[in-house]
Length: 239
Ligand SMILES: CC(=O)N[C@H](C=O)[C@@H](O)[C@H](O)[C@H](O)COP(=O)(O)O
Image (tube, rainbow, N blue to C red; front, side):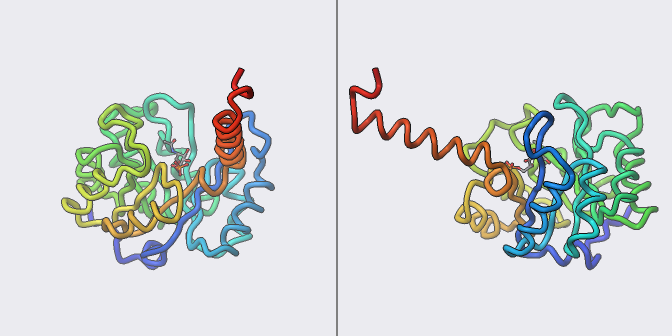
């Protein structure tokens, strides 16, 4: 299988920021309308790509932004949970995804199909595949079955690698050194310096989620800092 690395949708991401606009089950911002507004807002801020989860979110976002849209469907949080089936991947394409993000590991998928089947189906529907990887082995496997680009998305989440404090720059550099398709940095990119470090390590593009689009966690970092700082400057306050 030949990866479509010269596709203009993928090429539009080169050297650029992709923002992951996702809210999780039960959270206040879990609404396609809200995610679509967030997507529009980050495009105004310079995002050249949007990564979004769920068919309804993709449908809401697609007509409002004209940047590259990376779509996925999440099912649960154990095992293969990022676009786990062929049907999920095709639903993402129908909803408007240019690139479908799929689990790029060798683990069994709930529909019993190999990763190659998902990639072939997405290619037949004229979209591309980003394989979310947790190790070099995942990336080599995904590319051998046709992935158009690979991401460090699952670094620290599959047991293959420890959870790094910021982006897993070590895995990123390893992928860049060993693969010939674009390598997208994703996962725990905390600030613009982290993002730049990813580009300098050879990332084709950088995906940022939580640090831009998750107000609860962003607010918590401020609140925690204030609480701890207050305790440090007022020992009485810690009692
Ligand atoms: C492991 C997993 O499920 N990652 C998901 C993939 O779509 C999202 O929950 C992340 O927010 C996204 O990868 C961006 O990463 P961060 O939010 O760390 O910038």
